[in-house]
Length: 87
Image 1 (tube, rainbow, N blue to C red):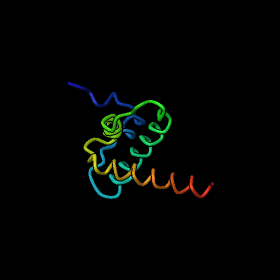
Image 2: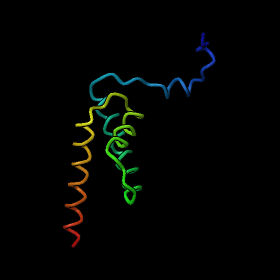
Image 3: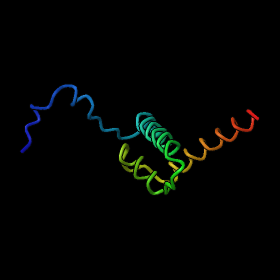
């Protein structure tokens, strides 16, 4: 059995389970943003959407793929709007 008394305070603070509400929404949005940055960095390679879903779920388990897709769609739309206005 694991002795939880050995866990440091910093590790305990970093171990947070987000159940629902605004905190969960923020965690999902943060995970999607991290996936977006990762995706953009590796955009030259062919990154399947399943890899993006796995990336987000590794940071925030149980996220619906449609939610991830919507987050990426918003970012693609912002990107195309900013690119067309720069021309």
